[in-house]
Amino acid sequence: MKQKKEIYYVFIIGFALFSVFFGAGNLIFPPSIGVASGTRWLSAIGGLTLTAILLPILTIIAVANMDGKMENLCKPVAPWFCGLYLIFFILFAGCLGVPRQGGTGVEVGLFGLFPQFQGSKPALFCGLLIYFGLVFYLVINPGKVVDRVGKILTPFLLIIMLGIGVAAVIKPIGTPVHTSVANAFSNALTTGYQTGDVVVGIVIAAMFVSSVRGYGFSNKEDIRKITLKAAVVAFVGLLLVYGSLLYLGATGSGIYAADMDQTALLVALVKQLIGNVGSGFLSVAVFLACITTSIGVISSIATMAENLTHGKIKYMYLVVFECFVGVLIGTIGVASIVKISYPTFFLLYPLSIVLTLLGVFKKYVPNHGSWKGAVLMAALVGIYDMVNAFNGMGASIHIGFLEKLYSMLPLSSYGVAWLLPSVIGFIVGTIIVKCSGKEAYPMIAE
Image (cartoon, rainbow, N blue to C red; front, side, top):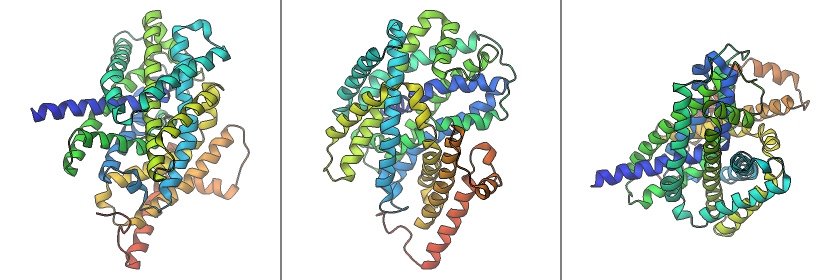
């Protein structure tokens, strides 16, 4: 009986993980990557899997290894780092990611069912009010969030998306063609940054670890075991859905342009695949994908802010604030929000990936100097990548010697220029602390 209950909890938490990570960005990006990759769609799946599936899932394991607390993941860097990271998260995920989810949920979800309202600003505003009204209702009781998402919303979402995926495989709309993308792997890898799920995962992980404890698992080893199994469930679900959506895009690479609006491309692909009925199901899936991600992000932001301020900022105040911001910024439209938020993830993603890997392999990380050095170097390269992203949008910020130095970094053409500097920072930081004779982790109670 105990084993059956354990399996039940694993799937509930795993489904909730899948649903929170499978948000608005994840829904619109794989088909676009597939169209751009064409015949190299398998290579593209590898890049997308790394940044949009594996690493986000690993954030849950990383936080579980640090006693289920995001603060413990950040403390080895500096006492103030957790607060700074959360501020960045609120600004870029809360004030840009959540409105993007709401906008996509309304523009593609609700307006997909009621196309007569498409393009209407008043209708968009009213749709956002409905969307964030539902989000508010679902997050006012944080203890029920995972249950509501895992038991009710996710199974429906998963069935719809797997149905579209199966249709894409058994009756493809065309044959993948050769495209002009120079490196399908790196293109998919860096596009995966835009989902923001590694950043999201670090902040929301504590909610899932807390849910495991809520089911009666108090032993640290049991919590890690349940968390790992739930992570595997989420990984398999995400890989199946992302892979099939990316393949759907690849089969349309000879029909649609790679620079086509991502939302319009998704709708067109599904409509061509399974007709108007399929488009209706897609609209429902988009709405659910967006709303479940908003639930996880807003609930986690509110909980973390309340904990870090020792109750001075109440959970309810943050929920109301996030819903208000979602409606306000969501009215500028999804395309504008994506354009504004895109460069920020080049800063946040390297930082978050390094934190995640340090947390996952914490047992083998010598001391807090390792964290400080690795995170510092990831941040410096991330700042440069963010500036480059702004340059790609029309800005003109150029520092000659830095550009030359950056081009010399191994793997820079693959979108992971931060990797070698972070390894060097890890080694140097480890040596400095060891030579100083200081305690390895004085900030964390073992």
